[in-house]
Length: 394
Image 1 (cartoon, helix red, strand yellow):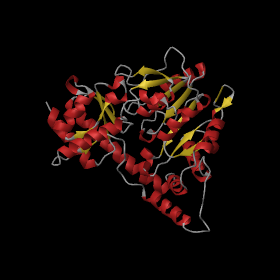
Image 2: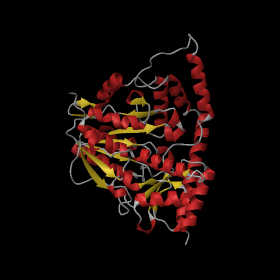
Image 3: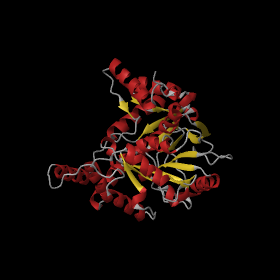
Image 4: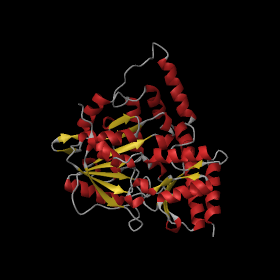
């Protein structure tokens, strides 16, 4: 009789966003006359930049000709994309070699798959509240998890603990709280990791939303990070690749543990278990870094930044407490009147037909909080805030 992975029984029954979608769909089916506005998941709504679309179209045409057709590509990504990413880092004053960059089908996949490199005996430190993938992938592997509480007192940016761990997940700007670490705070984490031999898994999927020059966009802006950190990045929120899937992970050659180089281990893992991102998508991703596309991509990001400003301004007018909304596409608000997260979800859905994400789904410290996303249509975002204001206006 085959034996299954018993750790799957330790997972929550439903993935958070699947449960949100299920409840929203059930409400819409029961109330077909209600116009439901979704400010819940981080799925972008602006189309791909025209320069990116044209690059993909050219690549598709290449695939239709025997002279320019391409079969299997390098598992770690084509040189033209890795070099474009390297040059983008260099333009921000960060030195990363092209062969330290691994192109993937998204940050979520790599964040989950990178745990293949670590033994199950490792202790994993996860700030709470947190993106559920960090937790679930390690629960699946049976690792010991330790949670580091985030709160209004520490700005939802907890610092290093006073005990050693093996693996640390950090996300800045944070999903779900919208809070972002400054240089001094990240330096403390780098010093901690180098001091106890931990590895920092740094999720930088939302770095493009940072406008404050005092906030790092990459962990590798911090001295000492190359000996303790791996960085995960995404084209989804940067350039609208949620439907075409492309991201990249940076594994410095200096990062070794137990006499083994994580760069070589990840290379070996990817060449065995991953067959690379399509040539067409990689050509589109490389076009993101052209002058023409940069302006077009910036317009889309600015669109979401304005949505975040609209949400934040609406909450300010109501006197709600929140983090995010600046340097982040997410707004993390305290539920009014002492409501629980799912109670507030139900209240908004039933009385305003607005869908957000209950904070409790991001961990115990998320109870009593609620996440709204700026990844929506401008008019729909305004309408949602008008509906919320009608419920809570003094």
